[in-house]
Image 1 (tube, one colour):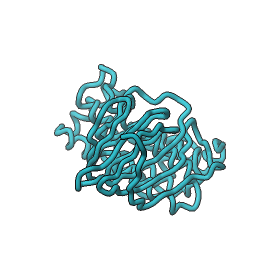
Image 2 (cartoon, rainbow, N blue to C red; image 1 turned 135 degrees about the vertical axis):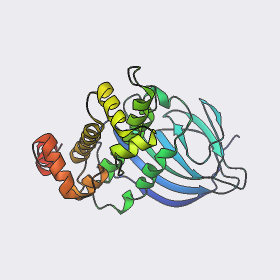
Image 3 (cartoon, rainbow, N blue to C red; image 1 turned 60 degrees about the vertical axis):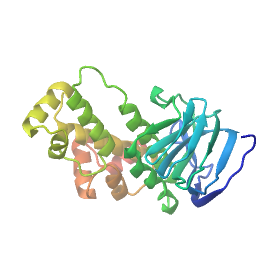
Image 4 (cartoon, rainbow, N blue to C red; image 1 turned 90 degrees about the vertical axis):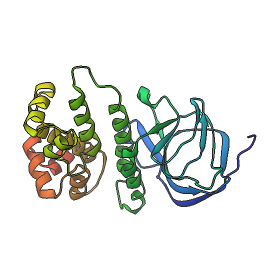
Amino acid sequence: MTKTEIVENLIDYYSFQKKDGPYSSIRPLNIGHSKCSKGHIYGPFRRKCFIFQFILKGQGSFESPYGNYSPKSGDLIIMHRGDLVDYGCYGNDCWESIWIDFECNEKLPKVFETGVIHCENLREIFLEFTKIKDMTHGQSAYATSLIWKIISILDTDMPTPKHYSRYINEALKIIHRHYIQKITVNSIAETLNLNRSYFCDLFKKEVGVSPKEYIDNYRISASCEILKQSDLLLSEVAEKAGYSDLAAFSKAFKHHKGISPKQYREKHKK
């Protein structure tokens, strides 16, 4: 292809204000939700920023310095700053996707040195991006936290230290990916097809704490980042950190940190 042609139906779009953030080395720029029409062509074009584009359904073609791909539902397309990319939809099953473009001042983990990664678990995160336009505050901070969550999930899929067994490796992935949901020690043990007592003993032996302690610690750590980087209501922070209600969150937070979520935010707010 020698020119850029765009035949695309934009479903939704949100552009962040320049005054928002950055809250870390990442600055979100724009979010889009679109469905391509048959014959949609884009490129060749050199990217000026990073883009994560998740395919909700359909398929197409994508070319980047990392190779030629045929992305489909559940795939994450990765475009790096400076990449010369070319993509399109030629069949009847054209893709629908959600994308976020952002600036990043540090090197992404090695797992991102590719053009496409399949990870169905990212779907819920990208659907969260579409809700940002309806937020009244904290849009940029929340988007930044979602980008970091994508990076964390995919980086976790890299081989973990060898002292972890296959079962504990999988358990950690489940916790890191689904801590926002109502996961329990029982549900993780059942997923791994292990007896609960055996799983708890194995987890504590290899990780050093019980599965419940690890889940609680991970959720509290996630809530600390949200508290520092956003102005979300405490009830919203509780939900984003995997707690069913504010009372349970506040009790758990004070138990771990010795102060309330509100006090923590006041102490660490940038």
